[in-house]
Image 1: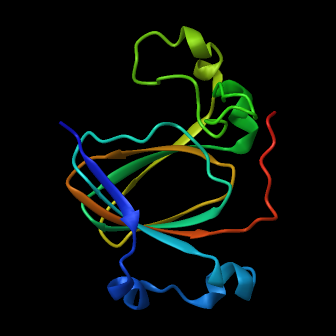
Image 2 (image 1 turned 135 degrees about the vertical axis):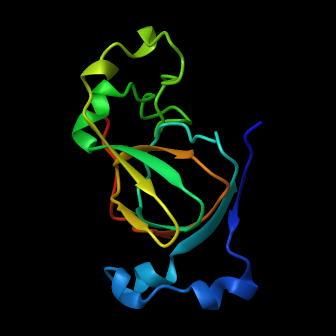
Length: 154
């Protein structure tokens, strides 16, 4: 079975993994950043979702596949309503053969990219994505906690 471990970067590693300040729009953004380590096994897939933050994703070991949709695809991805606790996720299970709950999905336009060791990917705020682990994997996400960005529910 697939497994994933997702946790903040331990303090003992934080200084070694600290990104350069020039990655952030302001010093406040750099101070508010959050970093997470992902350890996962093949077959693990995230639910299709978007984040409100800038994300610099670095693949350290193994391979992962990102599928991304621009914000203008939101209506085709069957988002939960804005006031729902899962408002940033899709209602559809795209691995299930019956996509009746998300009839517009087949009209969506996505981009797929595979990441290997040493590859990095910038995921802009509000871009929908799902991530599949292809081989045993270790990854690092650095999020900029920009409070000025607010998602809309188009």
